[in-house]
Length: 347
Image 1 (cartoon, helix red, strand yellow):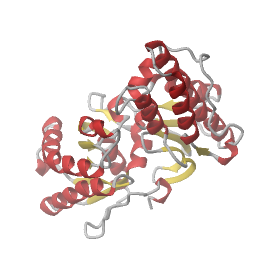
Image 2 (spheres, one colour; image 1 turned 135 degrees about the vertical axis):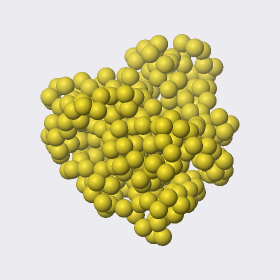
Image 3 (cartoon, rainbow, N blue to C red; image 1 turned 180 degrees about the vertical axis):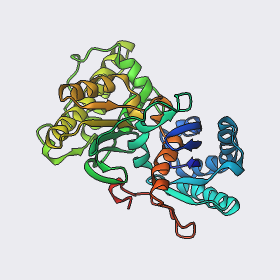
């Protein structure tokens, strides 16, 4: 089933065409430059930009996939979580399309899309190649700007939330630390580059939730506050100080992930681990997570391209493909924005 998928959950206007787990096209337009002066996403600005770009992105997705609109057999859309007025743009467009094309509508949870993104296959991959073998139940980590969740996938479509963030998510914390160091917004990827040049032993910052791992909660507000105080103390910042501060902050942020992940994998043993979300593109975090998995003989699965790590519509299309196979379609008259939709509530 060829599925046209759209995602307008935050500040990426994204569209894709998928066929099962095969990604035929995956295009997106980033609004980062529009929000940079505000230091974060402004919902009304995001909504307006989505409205201006969504038709163009859909046209590009169809063109890159070599499809006509008449070839589309279903439309998938992110219903949540995300910014309510941004989600509304994608939902409205999806409803227009299914009404015009007379095809089913599939609503998808954004976090579910990230969790299943490692199952996507590139269009260039041989169609005779074996699908990725994943033994269920499996464990997934979704680390992005708004979400930091460890999820037990009992089977595709049935999820249990094992650990979640209670304040700032990992990606958001990295972006805020980067802004403190004058790197602008979003700055997580720049922080990663600066951290490679720094010394982890230069400064002392607290490890989040140290000794409280049994609560299975991510929390970065305390680390962020400690970082702000340290930066103020070290002003004026020199390049060497920036490198070292970036390295120390990133290290402590990732130690928090490591400690919780170790606890979960030891308490809920699985054979396979799926890692998605924007921060899964970070090479240092990948290395640390891979080591933890290797020590426990757990297979680690990542998206085939870093373009599938951040917000994108291909992952929505892949998740929708599994829902379509189960005949889990959505009534266009009943679909609504679900800005706080948790992944364990997908049913």
